[in-house]
Each structure stands twice: as C-alpha cells, then as structure tokens.
Amino acid sequence: QRPLLPPPSRDHYRDLNDHAYDIFEKSKCEENRGRTLLSRLQSMVSKTFSHTVKLHLFGSSANGMSLKGGDIDICMLIDDSFGDTDIVIEKLATMLKQNHFTKVLAIPSARVPIVKFKDQVHNLSCDICINNKLAIYNTRLVEDYSCIDDRMRPLVYVVKRWAKRRKINEPFTGTLSSYAYINMVISFLQSREPPVLPCLQQLAFGATSINGKVYGDNLADVTVDGYNCKYYNDLHNLTGFGKHNKETLGELVFAFFEYYARRFNYVTDVVSIRTGHTLPKTSKTWESINKKSHYYFSIEDPFEITHNLARVVKRSHLTMIISEFNRAYKILSRNGNLHIVCREFIHD
Ligand code: ATP
Ligand code: MG
Image (cartoon, helix red, strand yellow):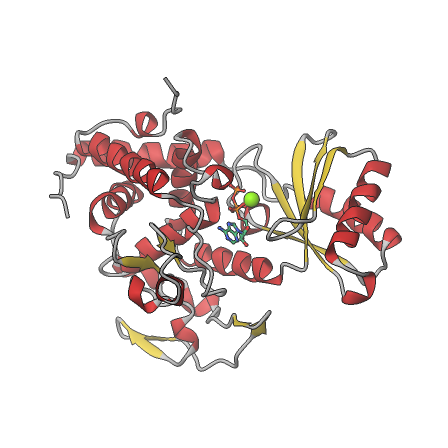
C-alpha cells in the first residue's frame, strides 16, 4: 500500500466541513419527490391490471437521498397469473403511451426487465421494474442506516455529487451505481474506531453489548427470493449509536477518500456491509468456482450475497475510479477545496 498523506490543517478541516454541508443543502430535494407520480401511476395500474397490483418506490426517491433531477425508481409487485414479465412490461408500455407519457421504452431482456419513460409535466425520468422485492428491502436497509447517524446522509450526498461530476457513476459504461457507492460509504462508517454505524445484519443474530449498551436481538429469518433479509431495525434503540465517534463530517469526508485511495485492498478484499468488515475475495464463490469469473472490484450485495455490485467494473474502469479517489485525496490533503474535488470532469 502507498504511504498516507498528511491530513488537512485545522482551519481547512473547518472549511471542508462547511463545504460538505453546503453540497448537502444544495443537492437534496423535497422529501415527497415522486409520490404524486406514484399515486397517478397506481390508479392507472389498478385499472389496467387489477387493484391487487401495487407499485412501490425504491432507490433514492424512497430512501431520502435523491439529487435534484434524479430518476424515480418504481417496482410493480404482481403475481404469475398476469403472464410472463415481458408481456407485463409490454402492457405497461402501452398503458403509459395511452396516458401521454413520453420516451416510453420497454427493455424486457435486461437482467432486471424494465420500462423507462418520462413525465413531461413534472420533468421526471422514471423506471418501472417487476417484482424486484430485494430492491425494496435494500432501499429500506439503506434508509434505516441513514437514520442512525446524522453524518451518513450528507456524506452520501457528497460522494454521489463527486461521483456524478467525475463521471464514475455510470454503471451502463462500466463504473459504479449510486447503490454501490452507498455500500462503500456504509462499510467505511462501520469501520471507523469507534464505529459511526453498527452492522444491522449481524445484530439480528443476537444481542451485543457495545460501549456498555445492549443492541440487537435474535430475529426470525426473513426470506425474500431465496435470500435472508433479516436485520435489526429497532431504530429507537439505535439512536445515538455513533455518539462515541466525535469525527466531524469534514473529517469523515477526508477519511472516506483516504480509505478508498490508500487503505482498502482492491486486489484481495471485498466490501461487505452484511458482515461489518471486509471479506477476503477467496471467501466468495464468485471468485473461486470459475477461474474466468474474476472481478477487479468486489462489493457484496447485503442480501443477494452471490451478487457482486461491482461486477461491471473492468480493469481500466477500476483504474479510473481509483485515480479519482487519489485525486480527491491529494487535493484535500493539500488543503484544497471540496468544490474543486467535485468539479465537472471534462474529456480532453
Ligand atoms: P440515484 O439517485 O443516483 O438514482 P439511487 O439511490 O436510486 O441513486 P441506484 O444506483 O439508482 O441508487 O439504485 C437503486 C436501486 O437499484 C438499489 O436500491 C438497488 O436495489 C438497485 N441496484 C443499483 N445498482 C445495482 C447493482 N449494481 N446490482 C443490483 N442492483 C442494483
Ligand atoms: Mg436511482
């Protein structure tokens, strides 16, 4: 591992903290984004399919961490009696066109089949997928984590802003999704000494005493599409969990970039918020069963543990991502401004 760089000075830590809150305040948008669209769509779906078919928001419009202008993710829960997913997707597309939505595009062959469209009235881009129950569960998990400590939400906003501006939040071209970055943030916050966040999934296997307070319980399994989705979510008991960690948001922003620029080992380790610490790559079947399936970067999905959230990332893209972490780390170490760190990437 390469040597660590000096941290910012005290004054610059203060600026960094202010700028991080600044980005948070300017980027966040109203809580109820997407709700009006959701209820309009729900009544159309009830008429077209049945009143038993329900729509759910997931992703950032449901976990309270969306950026202005961000997409709306919707999942439709429907049973087999309505036919194959591709038939349902086509029927949804027809319904949307009839109701004057624009840019309607059905993609029935994707790993998660979806229909994309735009709501011109509110200028919203939206995706609807079918029966992606795990997405609803992982959205809730992320939201619950963000309620435990006030520093997580602004840190996620800074990271999302930075990743979008630096063009490394484009899963369709080989970089990471926002959800992957959120997993990296949670894993980092779990790794602080003392921790800012607990590991909610481990706490579901029995009570643990942390700093003299007891958290967790032995919970019943919650099986969704064959995966165990149980986690401890007594948020009332969890408030104040991170109070023994006194780091400011500014200090955490710097430490986050340092962690993924210098401390995390991309060659040997897997990011895993399920276990609360990194795992060796050799422990994952996706690395060992088939020699061909070697991944340059591994982020274990907290529930669908056979799924690597970073599987689209090729070697050249990982190099790009790590060099962005290094760039941010170096600028901040030299007392540079967070707004420069988050400056738009221009291709030359
Ligand atoms: P943004 O505001 O950038 O859209 P987001 O919080 O909505 O951020 P997304 O990356 O759009 O995050 O993820 C939304 C949902 O899509 C996640 O909750 C997850 O269920 C699913 N998802 C995202 N990336 C992956 C991935 N690499 N593999 C599997 N599912 C993913
Ligand atoms: Mg999204």
